[in-house]
Image: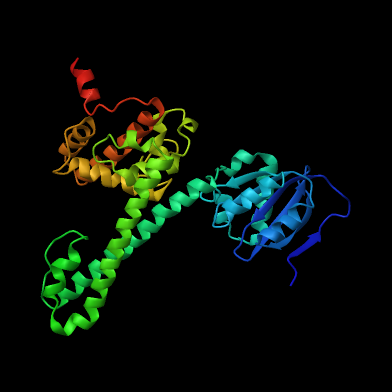
Length: 360
């Protein structure tokens, strides 16, 4: 089977200004345009390492635009090794493509090429992480998948017991199996006991993941120790923060952490209209969820007195329908700013720094 299919759309040879590549799981469509915006050549190539290298190594070094996706990390590295200048477009920003009523892989490749020729910044380009950081982030995501599976199994067992009029006691996920094993009726044991064994296995695997997280943080990312000085920030959140940001110097101000992680309200301002909207939820979902969990701990009964806790309690004291939720999000946003500032400055964390400054 052919690995590459193409067709020439212009009779004369033209200098290629940009190439747009719409990556697919099996086939990737590409389009080459010249400096006048004319399509020089277009076609498709198998989304395989050898096929892509064989095709793009034949062409002159130029600008290549691709979209974020499953294959974009390794494809971008392959094209850069061939000497091309690669822009990875943020697919969430390209409304021209994902809201096109005539959406087609071939047309998408044309749009990517034209945007790259006019101004690559229109692609809202991103930069993929290094291979080592990607491997360490995979460990965090694998742990997250196992935790979600354990939570779903626990909820299933609780739901089954409620359906027969029995309510299981409140307990942690770690002690759930030991606490409920003796309360399972004999008729349900063939269906529930295997799930309890599976829950024990999942808890064991989660503890193994936690040990790996601590070892990776200590061995490869010593800066996580400084971030953990903030009470409520554990090794998992500290490592996720370092792996997500990777290079703190690329943010000129620590305040940009809030918008970067989607912890600020989205904007839809037009003329005199500026409706209040929910947080944008852009950026890394895992890190945002971990920061929110830290904020909930700080505002909970076990949280220690600090500037973040005082800030959240003031917002919660205002009341309102969602006062507690707004307080949690506000603390998570300030926590992200604080962690970035501690990382960049190398300063020692003072939990009541702002309060003492105001008092002085």
